[in-house]
Figure 1 (tube, one colour):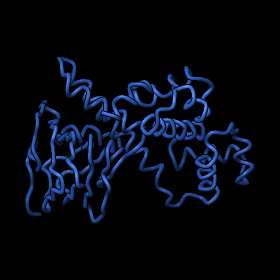
Figure 2: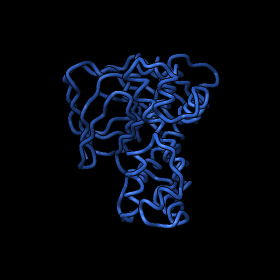
Figure 3: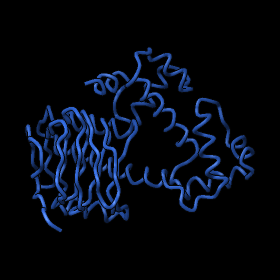
Length: 272
């Protein structure tokens, strides 16, 4: 395979790191325009892009790894990187083989390199970053919970993003939810739009997307709200209304359930 980097060994400049029996977490800075040669890592990686970004080639594919995305790289996957025209800072987690094996015992297995984006992943990544900078005696437990959630939700998102063998009517229902996420939609109305029975719609979503239509719609509203928090200075009440939440309190409660951050915490951390 060529060059294999050992646990905790990375290109770039390591600002600080933290080790446990299950993983090593490193904050790494990469200079503007840096390029890395083909290489692999001894252990699987989870990478949270704090600032900047880069293009990664891995597993025969190319990924854009932008700010606040989470990247998963399997152990010994051949990869190379080309960093953008400004400094990039990442939080990199080396997952030891036993940690990955315990996760794989659930039957949920990530075999290929992947990028994950959205409010949930931004939230978990920002929590990792915050915990890394204020570590204490319970940090190891918090890190483990965050990493397991990233992997589990990452696998779910891969299912959601895959339209292989999805019936055309179900893809149409998915597109309808994307286009009209701010409307008050009932199962009967969605089913009528795509020409199936509401029970078939519900069963189809669960079979192919591992989620209910209502949960999917909530996810879309959270994603919209997260973009507004990150990119605008709109008051929370206006964002809540635009995303079709009942009120600001409902928005704040739902957003926190999805990201483990309040809307204000999310806005502050995404502008770090």
